[in-house]
Amino acid sequence: MDFQVVNKKNTHNYSGAASVTQGNTTNSTWDSSSGKQVDNSRNSNTYNGGDHFSGGAVNGNVTGQKVEIHNILHRGAPSPEQKTTPEEKFREGISLRAVRSALYNAPERGDPPKCHPRTRLAIQGSLNPWPAQLTGGSVRLLLGWTGTGKTTIAQTMAEYWAQQGWLVLSFFFSRLDEDRCSTDRFAGTILHQLLQSRDIDVSIEKLAPFTIPRVSWSNVIDVLRSALPLSAPVVVVIDGLDECRNHKEQQKLLRDILGSVDELGPSIKILICCRPERHLENVLDDFASKLGPPESYRMDLGQSAEDNKDIRTFLQLSFDRLCEKRRKDETMSIMDRLWPSQEEIEVLVDRASGQFIFAAIVVDLVD
Image (cartoon, rainbow, N blue to C red; front, side):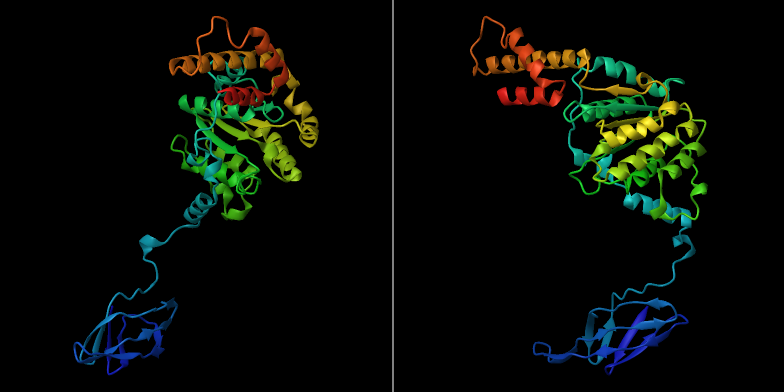
């Protein structure tokens, strides 16, 4: 595009059907080094035909009274190659709205804790093969109060299942993160992960007319079902549902998920980790007949001898490692007797009351 300013009046060589509305502000200064007058003009040109550019400062090289204008951006109509379909816009919008910090492998979450290799063996033994099993139900609930290790187990399982080559869709809620303390962007984030996967072929035709704010869990189910039958399991890991600040949101999402159980194939599994809050237990009660016996779908942490056994193992191994490290750097004298004693370990196990976080803090404090 060529523009010329001659005698401080614009002559526009513009190729197109749009008419031109001009508005100029002239600010002339005298350049004593060259002995010439410099014209610093500003243009604001509107092309009345649908195209508009906001012309800020116009930079030019002055020769006599002729100013050659450069670097003018004209936003014309997009070429056919640049046009996007409603489906492409929808995919882009979903990607922009996804909460990437909620994923199990999100860099924003740092290096989240995982189960010690010699603890939680019973739970891992039950969950490890579950996604590939044709029986065993589509939903599992891992319930426990604060500090019982729900998030640690969820993280461990998500990483293990991903290592098996299975597609893991995840959302780790957190009341400390404004993007992760609500269910508003949950479905969109799960859907984004699903659309980004190259492992399965999905269709989003049922989501037309592709209205992004209306994405819901039922939409996720529609897209998942479009890929059936699946050649490999798909696992949805939801941690910290109780971290949502709104109890009604928690209940609605849990109802939506449990209500979709009949629509899920045997290769689609959902793991939900949360506290056994009364309002969530009420929802579970409503779906009791559909879910079957509690022992078939729920695992309660902090209430069994197995939990105490895991905490005892964790304490013993952690103190062994701590003592060995201190002896090597000579900050701890070598003791003939075991330290801490087995009796002292049992006191700590008893005081932990099934909470792994208590045992972990004790080890960190002593260290």
